Image 1 (spheres, rainbow, N blue to C red):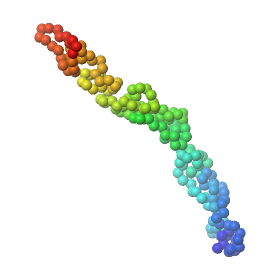
Image 2 (cartoon, helix red, strand yellow; image 1 turned 180 degrees about the horizontal axis):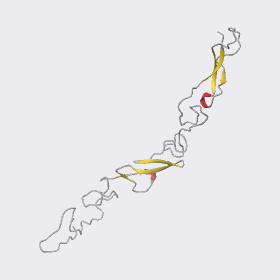
Image 3 (cartoon, rainbow, N blue to C red; image 1 turned 135 degrees about the horizontal axis):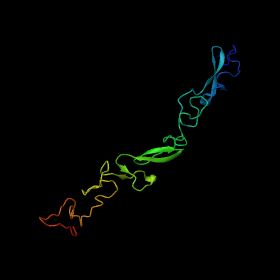
Image 4 (cartoon, rainbow, N blue to C red; image 1 turned 135 degrees about the vertical axis):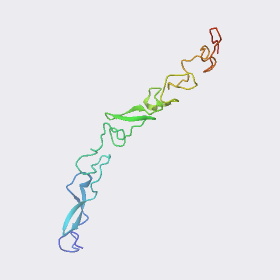
Length: 175
């Protein structure tokens, strides 16, 4: 074969298959020579592709990872592959730093620590004013807080038990 496109066969002069510089950018720069149409051409070993967040110029436009907003992308926060994640919360990336966003519906960050995300699951969603019903209506981690079943005439001994007497004021003493 005439591997070097000089019109002669098997004379031993290097030609096709030799590493070369395509003159392109990024991953397209490295090439290999091929004999095509009677002349040697340098063809890219890796063709231009879709930009990936990997520290390389995958689309051969002279820019690296330009399609990824590293200062604010929670999937690539500050650097490729650094994923922001918080239990039951929306992840944020602010100035290349992961931060916990809003809790997902039905969850609350009761302890104020981002390290465990929104750790408290609310029994009632959306939270409402606390009622004496055995549930944590206001999602503060305590059911029936604000009610004292030992002294409350409307909830004497347990929620919903009302103390009433005809023509007399009711009192609840020790439930």
